[in-house]
Amino acid sequence: MKNKKICKIANENSKIILITGGARSGKSSFAEKLAADLSNKIAYIATAIPFDEGMKDRIKKHRESRPRSWTTFEIYKDIYKHIEKISQEHDTILLDCVTILVTNLMFDNHEIDWDVITRKKIDEIEKEIKEQVELLIKIVRDIKLNCILVTNELGMGIVPENRLSRIFRDIAGRINQFIASKADEVYFTVSGIPVKIK
Image 1 (cartoon, rainbow, N blue to C red):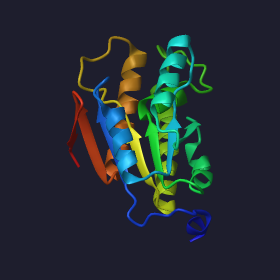
Image 2: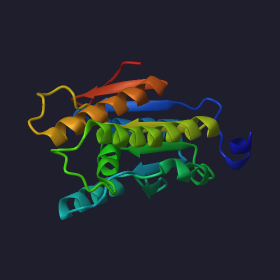
Image 3: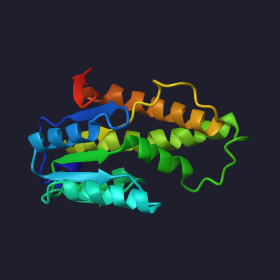
Image 4: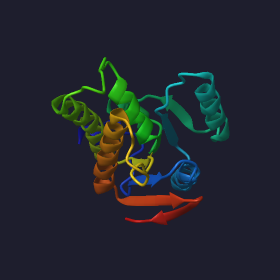
């Protein structure tokens, strides 16, 4: 009951929607269209960190392509802590993307040699990431917000050659599975065409 009082814009028919697909498959464009169809009170959560000029330019272009009425929040850590405040003026969240979120959390405060990392440490890192995602989903459900999450489908190519890439693929894949299991709808985008798979 507490969360309902905090949230000014609750939606009894709220949904969690996962959109997955390969690079340049049209998943972000579809997610933005879906969000616009659901609401005009949209909070866009960007998880990318502008680490070089190319990424800065990409983020800038994405920001310029979004409607001016959308509010952008650049967050990748403890997103769940910001949701109550975001819900004061928004009823729909679009998070783009889960894959970059996982990447940033994997490397956040971890001075690790990924070639010799133990299985125990890998499991600890994955557990921390899953907890962050789980808390996000829980509060979105409690407050009754629409939440669209964009992610990359990583497991359809060859097995990566180096250990770090294999660890990343495995963690990201399991996080995708977890979100899909909790989502009301899941779409797989192929060549700009969204296919509903759940």
